[in-house]
Every structure is written in C-alpha cells, then in structure tokens.
Length: 66
Image 1 (cartoon, rainbow, N blue to C red):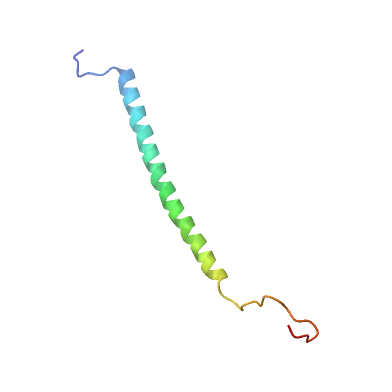
Image 2 (image 1 turned 45 degrees about the vertical axis):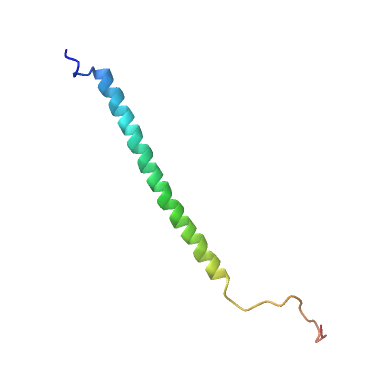
C-alpha cells in the first residue's frame, strides 16, 4: 500500500465527518429560513391586531358622564 491509499476505516471516518458537516450546514440553513418565516408570521399577527375600533379607558353606565 502506498501512502496515498487510505484504509477502509480511514475512508469511513472521512465520509462520516463529511456527512456530519453537511448535515450541520443543512440544519443551520433550514433553521435560519424557519426563523425568518416565524418572525414574519409574528409581525403579520401584530399588524392584524392593531386595527379595529379604539377602546375608551372607562365605560359609562346608565348615561352617567365621566
């Protein structure tokens, strides 16, 4: 065997490391996209709750003035 030939165990370990690195990178990208979508959903919800009739600070009963 020459120095350039890897043992089956070395090939396995190298592939395992590469696979783990790819999996982490993919997960990070997915989480970034999910966080952006979640933040957008929260912002849309806040905008939806801002509309409507304004509420007074106190209510009147039986026509009593404030």
